[in-house]
Image (cartoon, rainbow, N blue to C red; front, side):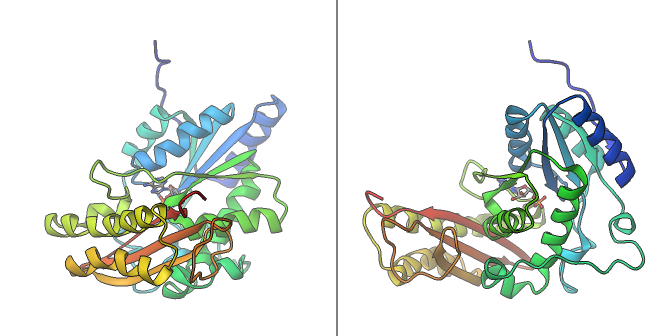
Length: 292
Ligand code: AMP
C-alpha cells in the first residue's frame, strides 16, 4: 500500500527554514532541495520524486523570483496556484514547501548579486539581460539557507542548469547539483508552466520546437556532424509553423561554447527559443554523433 499523502508544511521565513534544516541535520537526515516558481506539472514533480529516492527528506520552494524577469516579461501574469501546488508536492514526497514573499527575499537595502560568467553568455543570457544573475542569486540564497545534500534541476532549462552547476562548484557550496531529463507531453511538447498561456492554435504550432530538435537529434545519430546542416533541419518545422524564432543553436553540451562540427568526443546540445504569440518557449536535446 502507498503511504498516506500528507500536505507539506508551508514555511514563509528564513528563520523557519533554518529551524527545519538544523533539526534535520541534528537527526542525521539527508535533504534534497527542489527550487521552482510553482504552477507545478510532472516535470517539477519528477525532480521531487528523484529527490525522495536520493535523500531522506525533500524540500520544495515556490517563489516567482522577480529579479530573473526583465521589465517587459511576464512577472505579473505568471500563473500561480499555491494550494494546488502544496497538494502536488505532498503527493511527490516533499515534506516542506518554502514560499517566501518577495520582500522577504529582497528586503530594503538588498544589494548582493551572484554573476556566473561564461555559461551565462549567449542563448537566453543575451536575449534576457539580467535573467541568469537573478537565477544565480536566488538559487545561491536558497542553497545557503537550506544547505541541502542534493539540489535537483531540470535539463529543460539547460543553460540555467549549467549556470547552477558552475556556481555550486565555484562557491564551494558542498551540494550535489543533479540535472534531470525533460518531461514531455505525449506529443513531444516539453512541459512548462508557460504552456498554459497558449491558445489552441499556438499549442499545435508549439510542437514545431520539439519536432525540429528531434529531427536534429536523429540526423546526428545517423552520422550528420555538420552543425549548419543540423540547424537547417531543425529550422524547417519552425518555419513551416510560422513561429517567431528567438534562437536555434548547437553548443558544446558542457561549456556551451558554439560548435561548427559535432565530434564523438564532445557531445553537443541543440537549444531553441521561440515565440508563440507573446509566449516565449524554450527546449533542447542532446546531440550525440553516431557511435559517440
Ligand atoms: P520553473 O518552475 O519553471 O522555474 O522550474 C523549476 C524546475 O523545474 C527547474 O529546475 C526546471 O528546469 C524544472 N523543469 C521545468 N520544466 C521541466 C520539465 N518539463 N521537465 C523536467 N524539469 C522541468
